[in-house]
Every structure is written in structure tokens, then in C-alpha cells.
Image 1 (cartoon, rainbow, N blue to C red):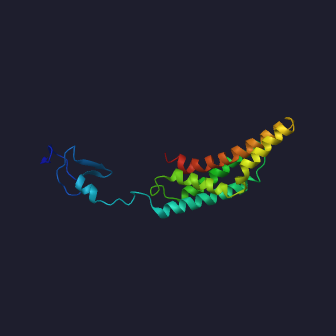
Image 2: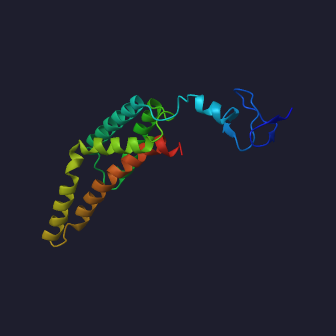
Image 3: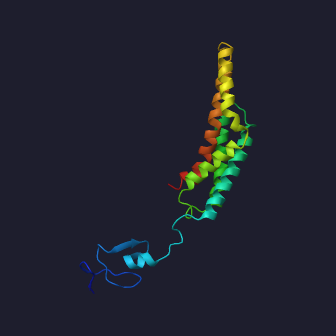
Length: 177
């Protein structure tokens, strides 16, 4: 049952129009082979990003970032707070993964990360750079006597937000790649 394509003889046919297609003309689809004419006419509902899904994901990410930023103020166990923030982020990330549709949002990782950063910026963590500069200045003003305390506060202040973001991204984006 061989047919003639424009380029060569072929036994393959398009699943839509049943026209013979050669290896140069075929387009591989999840359900079989299509000719180039039929591929151009098929509308794919998953093609491109859905703006509604983008805004929903971005808004939820901003909310999760804001909530995590406010919660981090009350977690003040030296060095262990980073681990607590990571697991808090994983809980929030698992909830977020159930609410968004990854098929409609091809850049989900970028959208979630930007939303988390904006949400964290809307909390007192926005004052983090000035806090770190004042702690650094205090360390030199005291002659290095409180260096362990200052370093403990700096590590917690820097790594808790980073661990929270990593915790949120792990169940949402990390398992999708």
C-alpha cells in the first residue's frame, strides 16, 4: 500500500487526511504522523501560555512569598531556622503545585521565583540590606568582640529566605524538570 509523495515513494500516511507522506514531509505528533498541511491547521490548546494561568500563579506566589517573609520573623533558632524555613517552603510549594497547571504555563519556574521575590520584598525582609550593613558596621565598631553573634544573625538573615525559596521551588519546579 505504497503511495507517492512529492519527494519520494512512501508507505506512511497522514493520520488526518490519509495522504502519503515521506520522511521529509512528516511531522511526528504524540498520536502518529501528520503532513505539514494538517499540522498547520490543528489548534493546540497547550500551545503558548495562558494569561489567566500566569496571573493566578504569579498572585499565589506573591502571597506565599509574603506569608513566608512574615513567618520568618518568628523563627529565630540559630542555624536551625534555615532548615525550618526550607521545610516551611516545601509545605507551601506542595500546596502551590496543586493549584497551578504546569501544562499551560511553560515558564512556571520563572513566574514562581519572581512572585516569591516580590512577596518577600513586601515584608520586613526588604530592610535586609540595611540591617546587614548596620550589623557589619557594629562588628567593626566593637572591635570584633561580638563577631559570633553578628555572623549568626547574618547567616540566618541571608540563608533563611534562600532556603524558603528553594523549599517552594523543589516540589513545584524541581520535580517537573
